[in-house]
Image (cartoon, rainbow, N blue to C red; front, side, top):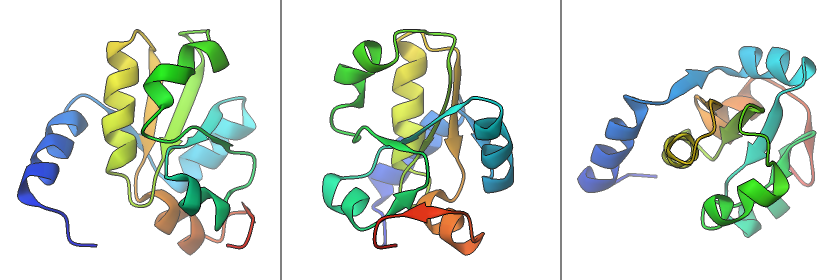
Length: 122
């Protein structure tokens, strides 16, 4: 997907404040207790997602996160299709006071390319 200049500008700005992890680091951290959150749209989630992830779409994560995960010290790793929307969501969660938030670089595409476990249709 080709992204617009304006979108890439706000993602670039968010990435100056957001920490990224790769798939291997994500798997290691999830194994140690981090929560993996898929922020893609409902239809993307339904087509397949990372095994063990929970779905909290980009459009509602800020509204729902404090009810679902009230611990602002919980380690959260967000992913989307390619790492852009997850960076935006991670930036907002940090603004909400979450201290251990990461965006998975490369997103769902990188997860599948790494051969990591999936659920759903794939």
